[in-house]
Length: 393
Image (cartoon, rainbow, N blue to C red; front, side):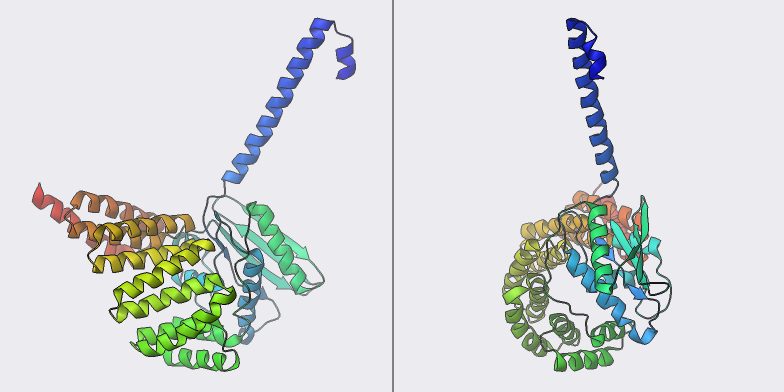
């Protein structure tokens, strides 16, 4: 190109250089635009890493799939726009999609996307023949990336999977977890028993785990929640107080969840101001670790308590925050819970138009996402508000 320019007159060379510069600029702009449009295909929302099974394992060692999953989650960390769900949260989302621990059924990925609102689902498995390798699929609603990773060890395979996810999502990740909780089989056994409502067995599994590992904060919180559900509030609080002191040292994400659980104890004891105090601390901790899912839960509980205290403006603000946080995590059931709570509050204050606006948004989410477990509650609320509006017209 430059040899050609040298043969032109001074004026021609001038125009040729200008045109060349414009062409280079437009080309760079087009490449930037294409790059940006490809990235935009991945909408904001949570990342779900599914259990990583190994072909040679039997059902009796299924807990190892969750241990490997947790290791990948911890290595990945979390992101502001793409929060990475913790192992316990993934198990909860799978149960909402009717995929329970050890049920042997293939995961209904369409249903999982609907109930979780996830931006990305990571599906992978490890095989040892003909050599050690990990097959993976990175799935979202727009595209699938799949491949095979080969390495000398399982740890190396897991780290390579983390690197692959980071490159695919192209976001900044922050480490928030300091240790693994699912390295013991009793924890996944307890969660399975909770799913199947075998609560006495779940309590036994958790106590057995805590006998050997008294610092397992997830096990402590699950056991405390069983005590709360059984209205054994003193026992729950006795578990939570030392666990909170332990978590204050180096685990803010678990600390936020422990304080939320303690707030439930205070609420059930009618200590509403103390419950608000615990939730305020939990909120700051969850925000610090970009845990949008639990920020949504915390805000919903805060709204409920402020409503109990007749502080309706504060309750309204908390329900609105809850919706925004759950929208950021992509979790549709959380969004519906916040909107329904907001609609009920507006009914109390006779703001029926505002209540109708909130519930209509809720109805749209329930219908679009096929959230059958929230259908009756939401449409009953819609009918109630429509009846109120008809009476005042």
